[in-house]
Amino acid sequence: MELKLEFLLFIPFIVLLLSIAIMPFLAPSWWHKNYGKFSILLALFMVLFYLIALKKNDEVIKTAEEYISFICLLGSLYTVSGGIYFVIKGKATPFKNTLTLFIGSVIANFFGTTGAAMLLIRPYMNSNKNRLKPYHIVFFIFTVCNTGGALTPIGDPPLFLGYLKGVPFFWIIGNLYYIWFFTLLYILLIFYIIDKYNYEKLRRDARSRIEEKGEEFEFRGLYNIIFLLIIIASVFITKPIFVREALMIFCAVASYRLTPREVHRKNKFNFEPIKEVALLFIGIFMTMMPVLNYLSKNAEDLNIKTPGEFYWVAGFLTSFLDNAPTYLNFLTMAMGLEHLNIYNPNEVLLFLDKFKIYVISISVSSVFFGAMTYIGNGPNFMVKSIAENKGVKMPAFFTYIYKYSLPILIPAFFVIWYIFFR
Image 1: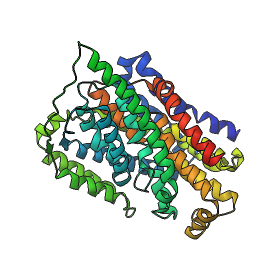
Image 2: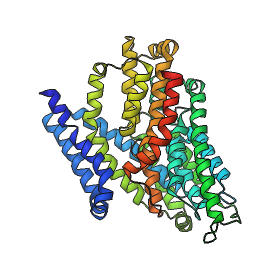
Image 3: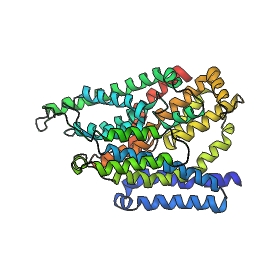
Image 4: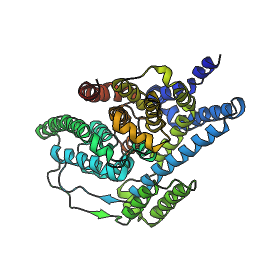
């Protein structure tokens, strides 16, 4: 009976995911007006059920704290980056676009995938304003928002959790750099081929013109870099509770007040994208509580034992769930197979020494598979919303998966599995 109830509690999460995927296509007008109410309604149902029926107050409070931290980080980075305006000098050739994505992927390891995405997405779109297509944004999500941030604990939340549990800071880059480089090189090569083809096609088309004269370099809002660095540094503040969030909000408010309206106008800045993320993700966070709870309690019963199995299962769940708790649950389970405790830093180091392939497989899948869907990682949905706000017709949820994720990412992920984790 208890198991049946657990599976019934999955329904609100599944309904929300399907609604995000289908409703913008079936009823776009209704969805645009009501997605926030719908998400909050599902979140409220789950919260009340946990509080009244299950008496799990602590779990609700913990999830609420995680949501507040999540949205404060994304909201502050979004607001501060909206006060930075710069032009990528010169015309947006395929080589220059590819170089921008590579640089953004490197920066992601210092500013986090969210910080790098918010810093670069507007200049990247502005430089391609005469030929901006959905694939430009999709490959930005693939690289800057996800795979790029696999080298440091700052790069992506799951790696930061591993760092807090005892994984040494430079262990990650020392063990993941070759997989990072291979995957990034593969994605960028495909992007270059696609962009080159479209660029040349546009040049041959007499009805279209690519701006041949590059724009003059312009940089405004330099002081916002300071706010950006403060926000990134505040991620390391863990106690007392909500101090880092207060610092993030302060930076966002100060940046918004100090930034000239002309800069916001040039960036076409408004709060609609962050509003959409905030409303949809409150539903995602609250309705995924029973899913994560089930994984945590039944991890060993899933019969996952090899690095390859950890890689694929953790990757699949990362595509649809928050990658941070997925990473933590699977790392806990992997250590449990060897009767080691994740809450003991010495045992974490022992596990790294003897069974590092498990940590590598879980780390890679938790970061890379976040690019499989719009909800696989926080900045994915943010970048999608910013692009749509600027008029880019982004692929729908399932279109993104079958047109881009499956044919482009899965072959690379399969090769990684075959070489390293099989």
